[in-house]
Image (cartoon, rainbow, N blue to C red; front, side, top):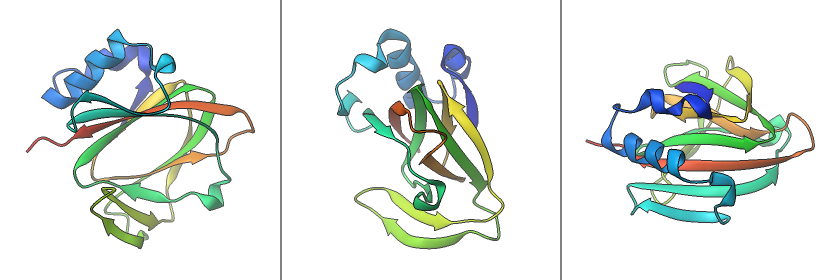
Length: 152
């Protein structure tokens, strides 16, 4: 997992073609101005889901990972609690088996690391079991999640 401020995202160019496509889009577009919902960047290889919400209590959130896409989770305004644990954490338990349509497996986990994601990003890979949308306060969160197809 890579965590940072959006102003530094260009540091990560060169990791893969699809990550470069996502970074170029970020550098050349106002993500806050995107319509809510899905916007294609490069067909189904790279796309963004734009959302506005009040984050949920931690106990209503879940850990997850993806088989075919990386998540570039970007908090544009506001704050949310973000959780992380590695796929090798012995405490993780599958709570919802892999859903091929949504490309997600859901988990419960102990011993995770939590931090406040505030006007920054988290790039999560397959092995990064992550939890998003957890409440820090009652303010609105403006968020973009860029889905980046894993290149084989």
